[in-house]
Amino acid sequence: MKILVINGPNMNLLGLREPEIYGKKTYKDLVALLQHEADSLGVEISFVQSNHEGDLVDAIQNAYPETNGILINPAAYTHTSVAILDALKAVAIPAVEIHMSNVNERDEFRKTSYVREACIATCMGKGFDSYIEALHKLLTYLNEAK
Ligand code: DQA
Image 1 (tube, rainbow, N blue to C red):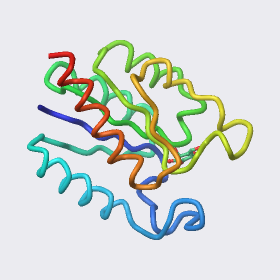
Image 2: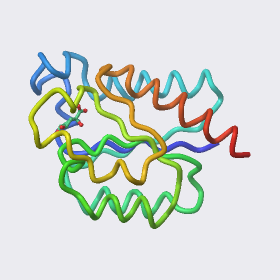
Image 3: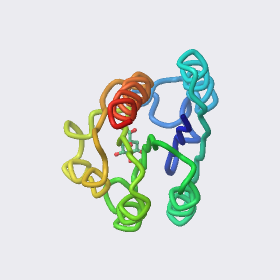
């Protein structure tokens, strides 16, 4: 089972950016946590982070056809990107939308998610645990779909 984790703009600055919202742990910590969880579950996991919308589209396209599932935190592009939505729809790889914060309880513009339509679930508001929850949801979905 191959899982790809995609993180969008500014997620490389975890630990530095708005620690009152995103906490003090770094992107490297996030990768280590997910790698450890994936190892214990016996799944193969890889990671892409980019600040550029086109790179995220490329990562989704390149995931086809080998990748079984995608975990995606498109960060700010969640609220703007038709291109990421279309890429997810194009490859039709089951994907879970992730946010560390609860985007429904912040600015009005964060309530809009373009990518949600192409995702099987959304996990948000739990910091790094949003990713762990999302990984488990995705694996449950993929195992049931077998
Ligand atoms: C985020 C929420 C987005 O609104 C924001 O632009 C981010 C991070 C989150 O993980 O909570 O960069 O996706």
